[in-house]
Length: 112
Image (cartoon, rainbow, N blue to C red):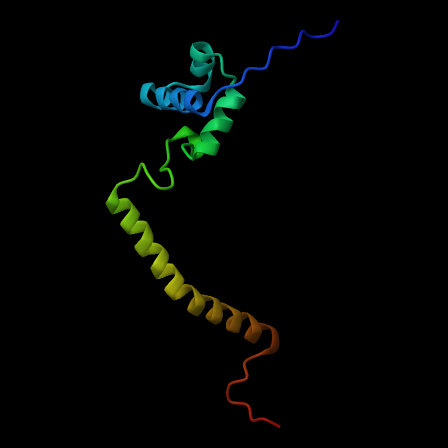
């Protein structure tokens, strides 16, 4: 006996945002969202992922362009700048070490 197909619902971006904000504010689980709004857990998680609000284990993350403090934004910018500054040296050192391990050190040898 074939399963009855459900009517597919469409939600406006505003309605999606309202549901996401309500769920975050009230600490609702995906099951709670389904009971309260009729949105399946898969759809709810998809919306969260697309909005940038979800991180591992359901913790609310920072959204790009908002949601974080100026201090958080400044710290991230400074960390990224420092990484970009030191990364080339780290890569160069690691590559040189690997090449030396493959072909032996060239230090102290005369060119033939």
